[in-house]
Image 1 (cartoon, helix red, strand yellow):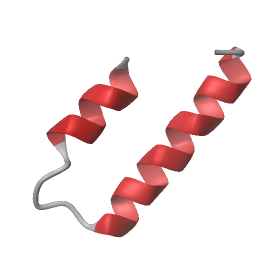
Image 2 (cartoon, helix red, strand yellow; image 1 turned 90 degrees about the vertical axis):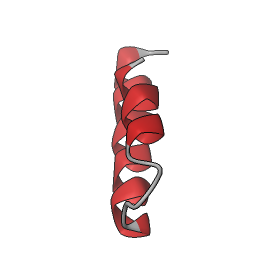
Image 3 (cartoon, one colour; image 1 turned 180 degrees about the vertical axis):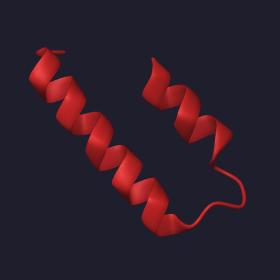
Length: 35
C-alpha cells in the first residue's frame, strides 16, 4: 500500500509530527475505503 511505502521511505530523518500526520491520514483513507 502507498501509505506503508511512504512510512518506510520517510522513517529515517523525518519529523515525528509528520509521521503522526501520515499515519492519521492513512487510517482515514483505510476507514473510508472500508479496508
